[in-house]
Length: 403
Image (cartoon, rainbow, N blue to C red; front, top):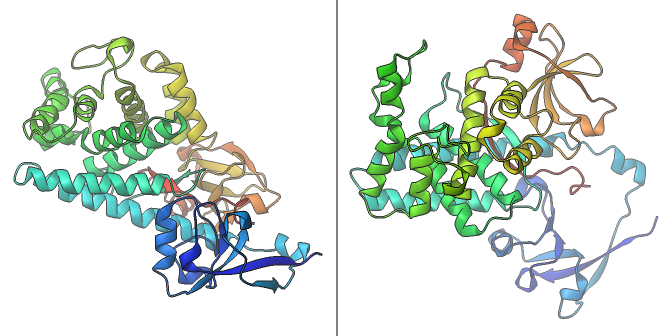
């Protein structure tokens, strides 16, 4: 096999477009692999912040002013490459997503607490949180969704807001909406349910059916949130429109103003769709069931184009879906991949024994069918934590990019 030539350059010569290899193990830096394609200036700044003086250029040599030193790397046999275990990398990437999600929820909770007492501080911190979300979305060209959670039995307003923001931003990314529109979407998603904090808790958390009076009170939460934020004079109009109209649908069946598609901003339509899906997801705790109900029963409430994009993002087996594998193991989908039938999963046998994280792309195994929660054994429910609330966050681990 031919040897690979690498060019050694000081970190000061790094430019966008290069693919570089860091002289560190993958556990010693914040990237998912030591090979990094430089697509953003922030990546260059992060590498400059590491304790390294040089990197190796793998691709993009034509972007360099000159070649300073060529070294040889020991060739790797093809069969060895096939045996590389990518599970630690995938697990690490999901752990990073989980940590980022929890931090975002906590930051959002802090922001909510300052809206009335320190509106300017709340706005600044919310804007910082939005920039973090934007940065996480654009860490690679192919973001995926991964399963995350807060560890709580119920989904809080802030947890719901972060998950809606992630879904909405993924949709906006596919639609190639502008960065300004994406920021409005992210900010509007974070705050879209803040008005619920003015609704009595016994109404918000009621398990049974609401009375007409209670339902009408709950339907006032978009107005409450809009008035609260509008009063500060700090938030952009497109973001406030999301807060006020995130329960509006293109067929005029929503509230509070029964708007139709012609009067709804695309940014508001995106958040309305993501929020509708998340609401169904929290109700049924089954991602594929929620997607099916949205597709069949709510199709007239949203544009066909937006629903198609959401389906593409979630895939056939969205994170959180309980499935049977072709080897008869039971599993919960943890992260989507380019191969929709081969996601990353947490697996066990039918009794809940032999739990393991599995990287189906590297196995001759695929998803065979979806399983209802009622069909799981008590042991499998416990091992897979099948009843836990489901939320989403960005993930950028890509098996093909890491080969």
